[in-house]
Image (cartoon, rainbow, N blue to C red; front, side, top):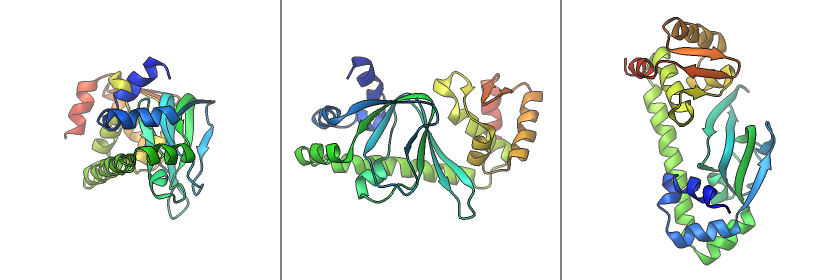
Length: 221
């Protein structure tokens, strides 16, 4: 792997705190794969195909509600690992993973992970910690959403989704509505209010945050 790729992965809190010998064991088994926009990495209910990390682009993890509505569970950005749950327990995938834009991924296939873990058994503990970290993030999101107004939830969602803090949010409105937990028509009304207040500018599949301080203010109302 290129040094740039390794540096990017080292910024991930989970990977950065892993023992050096176990990081090396993973990287020795890993390979870089490139995908076009909209490619499916794995589908809901698929058998596990290993551990992944985003090097370039984005990956959307999507689930389906009991009434058949598609839900966006997570946007995975460069330097972040995903696919750990099924890699850990061997059960079918709980989400669909698809690329958003041209994407490069680091892939540790199941057989490769098992081989690495045979040499470094503590990798299973590391993987369990990644499962726990993502579970805690999900629980915080749920807790923070309870009792908050749509306006506050939307502001928080935009702040979380902004790329590297530069104020650019690359997301479709139906995906953003799923994150906030509202209908798309309701989302449109609130985005238009944010636009009138000079907080954001809305374009196709993209939202620019014009007033970051103002958005932070809304998020703490």
